[in-house]
Length: 223
Image (cartoon, rainbow, N blue to C red; front, side):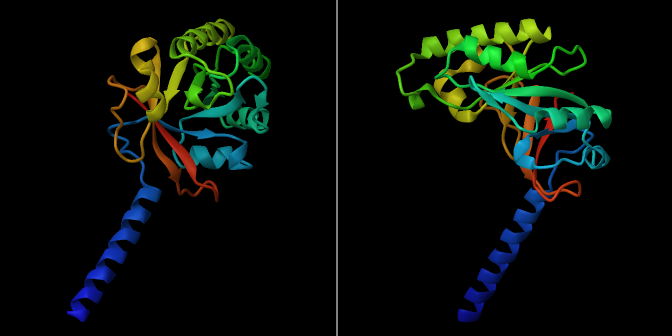
């Protein structure tokens, strides 16, 4: 019995290690999602854009701004690197429901250049208003978000894409409230929590790769 228990434990450990390795190195099949890319920011350190392209990145979203005052320290460097590697790229803003839309819009437009070649701007929706120092109603969150979207879309000339976390969607049902393309998050399995098809999907949030010592946030685009 002890030997059987030991064997079972060993099998479980081996299976767990194998599953972890597979997940760390997994990307969706190219025949299903031919266009794949990456999200990068200062947290990723120095990015080798030539190497990223070599491992299959077709496009990139680059962390640019956050809330009313935050700037990603790596934005300009990453933008120049992506352009030199001939990768299409867009800018991402982390939205803060605690801050006014006008202040966040001003932050984005001063950080992100007006460039017709950029991909549509992306807005990450993850923080809930329940975390705000002062109460913000759900209706106000949606109203302010629409104001912000109108401002950055006037600046870029393109409709934004909403990167919606499961928690944000569960609380605000934003995928139904605002008619924009959506970007969903879910390792390995296609997410359906928005109730409608996604345009972008973070398919592996920690992809082990040959381009960088750090894991990558790997994306795919709906064909």
